[in-house]
Length: 301
View 1 (tube, rainbow, N blue to C red):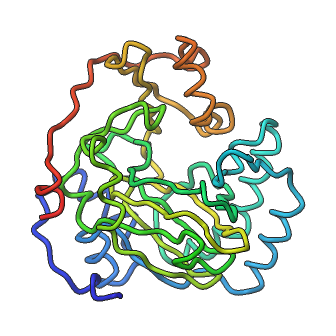
View 2: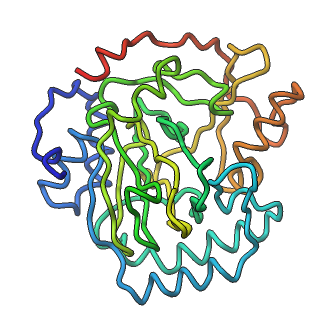
């Protein structure tokens, strides 16, 4: 199952500034971890002890549940009270950050949250990429995904398409999936092409925001509970791209950390359908988005 970590790749050459910024944040990882993260787009490692896992689970169960009956996946960002979202992010940061300090350098957390896949056959999260959080010509962002309960094949553990982050250079605007990524037309065909990895509580993935990933439905009897935190260089300006209702105009916003407690993908989807735009942040620039063309064969080669 883990042979994927031994594969080689011919990644495209990154710009000098991008490489320097990327290496500064990853400098505490060992050489093998850095190599695998750059080549395959993801790594797996032990992060938390059981004590921290238990503490985080206790916090999760003490907070309002954003559970949706129609869909088996939700995040704490879906909670309606902004103060609750901010409190959850603050507590997660306090517990997790000392452990991340040992692995990464010169970084910032973005939107720490609980992410839950309920025991629900409608809990499929199809192959996708995460939002763009920064200008990726200068910086890169990563998702730190920490298991608080066992993450298994039968309860929707994550799967990745290795090397896909080096083949796709597109921005990822909200709302998803209304914004069409290059592989949109055959995204579901990729579900069985991914490599899936199981985690024990306290183990984690760190993966590039561009890498294609997904999780199959939770067909077990228990919820799969984890934490997700985006991470980028401490000096990076946070950026958000939002698709307008004409289906092709993109507004680029320079944002702050408060953005994520105000705007969830669900809220941005509703705004898109109502033809309303983000009004609490100034538009930095506007441009037309042209979806890149990449075939399934090219993506899988």
